[in-house]
Image (cartoon, rainbow, N blue to C red):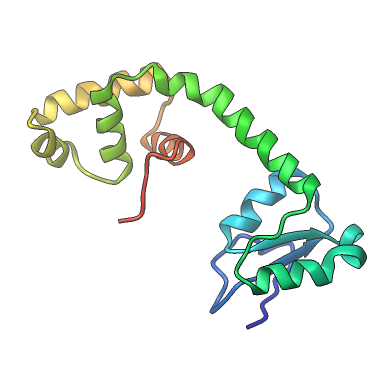
Length: 156
């Protein structure tokens, strides 16, 4: 089923009932993430559409992902930049701190985390404080975003 969206709502939700190919004027890396987060299976700039549009449609129709070399390069660069800066931060955390961070990001309360890890809720709060300090975070929502970037959250 074909689906289209304007630049203002790219990434605002999932594609209803199928796959999509984003055709846009934007080639900057900050536009790639929202396109794929929104459910697109392909990304093509209007500048290259005359050469690659038919190939992109065929690739996406077969259930594959279409990404021109330039966009793939930008995504790889973005991935490397995120992991180069955040990866060492994650390494600062102990195994127990990573467990507490993951459960916190998944929405569990201190009491629930304590029950799962056989520690007190007060100890969970202590771990949370250490995690926030080590990562330089000042709010739980930022902790959740960090856990997402690091791939610590998974579908249930």
